[in-house]
Length: 154
Image (tube, rainbow, N blue to C red; front, side, top):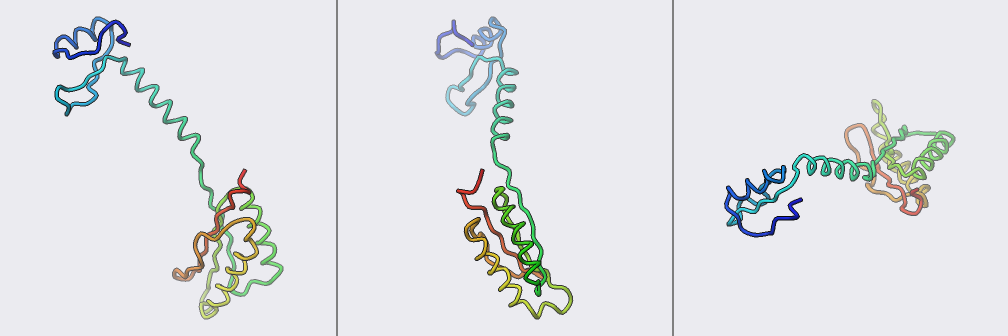
């Protein structure tokens, strides 16, 4: 692109003529510079390559998957262990885990039990992930986030 033209300072008319002679476009790179900096290039090809580059970067970007596990404030041991196995599987797959205790009606009086339950889960899943956000009460939900360990990620 512009191999036979030397880099230099040209008038606007000369630069347009050079671009037209080569069948290319004159693209203004830095309009605020004095004199303005322009480049002779195939603008459509430039846009196509830029779009292709952006698409490749987007494909490489990791998508964060968040899986949810719901508990009640008085969840039984069997149910707890069943949900804990699912949580382990999610963390091994590299997904973030959102564990929450949902308080229905007057069960909000058991918020300490809900917090104990979430902390117990965090302790049991210590080898698979680390706590990103400690249990926090938001309305009728007590939520905790656990991110997967780096070593377990595939």
